[in-house]
Amino acid sequence: MLNVPSQSFPAPSSQQRAASGGRSKVPLKQGRSLMDWIRLTKSGKDLTGLKGRLIEVTEEELKRHNTKDDCWICIRGFVYNVSPYMEYHPGGEDELMRAAGSDGTDLFDQVHRWVNYESMLKECLVGRMAIKPTIPKGMLPKTQVTDTLTKEGPGSPSYDWFQTDSLVTLVIYTKQKDINLDSVIVDHQDDSFRAETIIKDYSYIIHIGLSHEIQEDFSVRVIENVGKIEIVLKKKENTSWKRLGHPLENHNSLIPKKDTGLNYRKCQLISKECVTHDTKLFCLMLPPSTHLQVPIGQHVYLKLTITGTEIVKPYTPVSDFLLSELKEPVLNNKYIYFLIKIYAAGLFTPELDHLQIGDFVSVSNPEGNFKISQFQELEDLFLLAAGTGFTPMVKILNYALTNIPSLRKVKLMFFNKTEDDIIWRSQLEKLAFKDKRFQVEFVLSAPTSEWNGKQGHISPGLLSEFLKRSLDRSKVLICICGPTPFTEQGIRLLQDLNFSKDEIHSFTA
Ligand code: FAD
Ligand code: NAD
Image 1 (cartoon, protein in one colour):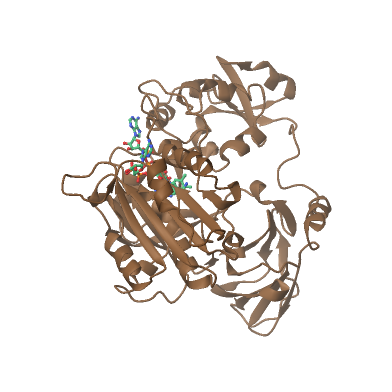
Image 2 (spheres, protein in one colour):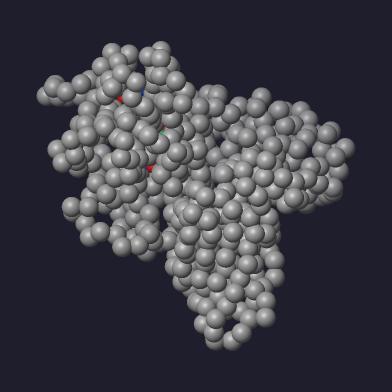
């Protein structure tokens, strides 16, 4: 809802439309971009009409503020006067008015729960609800959620711990088979220890204020066939612990993943290298006190504070496998790589580009709905990427070529404006030379007269020629990612070519 700028905005081809996951957007008036909104919030203007006072809001009071000029909305127990924001909302005034005078939490979460509304709307804060209007997220009784999970699969997770003189081992029993090192995210900060285990669409959370100090680093082991996770912590002092610690928020609870909120940790910028004239490879290092691996096909949110407001944008990590000839192999999972295009007039990417080596960026937990099971028994993999829509394809390509024995061919059709925009062209060509299962075709929408390859936009002609199955009934997956109009058009064309929904995976926010 809040965190997206404008131009009579976004322009039909703007990447903004991709960031919205295809939701409808309205043109905004001149001077109503996100940056304009930030400026207004810093101007000292009284945006609530309460002269800086915070009040307790009853349900009756909330209901009364239900017009465009006087619109209050409650999100997670906090009430905001969003009338000054109406004209800046990329989803339009009508969309905001759907929550006027009521609790908009569910609506907000459905559309874009990752948007940092607390920071964006802090000057619009009216106060707290006197009585919370809905059960707060994450407070569902564990049994209720567990019952749901039990119906879908095995029973509820649990944990235990034991110790030696120097170590404390926390064991999480997920009772699920498809658990791996990507499934668990661990953060340790001061005495707070948090482990989030993703089990299907739920998160099982261990969140403890530890009773004793531990060293910064720890190890995580997964015994996959029994779904057991062991986290080994190193004690600072060799004393016997009587208890692990005290429970913190959501400890020992199983919460629908969509309700967990995004957890961030600060990562250090290690390197920044030019890949094309406007795209750079950023390498971030996770803190030693974090275990986080971004699963294939998933993205994270990067957060920076820009003129006092926290801004969040999604990015898809890539692996460096295409660069392996040029680089030392990475020995641990502490590094996350991003290919990021810098938009000179953009809000977030110029700030990112200005960071110095050693500076910090906050990185969220991973999100996304790509499932590795989509590769099962796969024979033909087709990748349709446009511009930085190439990013999810990098890990997919690596995984497919190394882990799927049934795979016969992988074809990438890579759409760009000009030759100069093609990311990792020579690396892709080398890979095609080395591995006969892989083919790459470049299609340019604004080529120079010297280009003698394919040209144009995504079209029925290009696709029907490209998407040839290796066998009549071979199992196919087509992944598509790029600007929203590209992705939407691509999906329509694929459906026209009789590919089923299960055979198409599109990447959106
Ligand atoms: P914005 O401020 O959003 O601006 C974008 C464009 O609009 C620019 O061309 C800018 O000039 C123009 N513009 C902005 N404001 C105005 C205005 N008021 N008037 C006219 N024009 C304007 N990108 C990557 O590079 N790498 C990735 O790995 C990646 N992964 C993504 C994953 C997902 C799931 C999604 C949805 C998007 C991903 N993106 C990725 C895109 C990324 O999230 C950002 O949208 C992108 O970096 C642009 O952000 P920005 O704030 O710099 O630009
Ligand atoms: P770009 O503007 O350089 O365009 C690249 C190609 O996309 C063009 O050459 C053209 O073939 C095609 N294209 C662009 N606009 C089109 C339109 N209106 N109709 C049909 N085809 C069109 O691309 P860019 O600046 O690199 O933007 C990449 C986009 O991919 C961004 O919008 C970004 O948000 C999105 N992205 C999404 C994800 C995700 O997971 N959802 C990941 C990475 C990038």
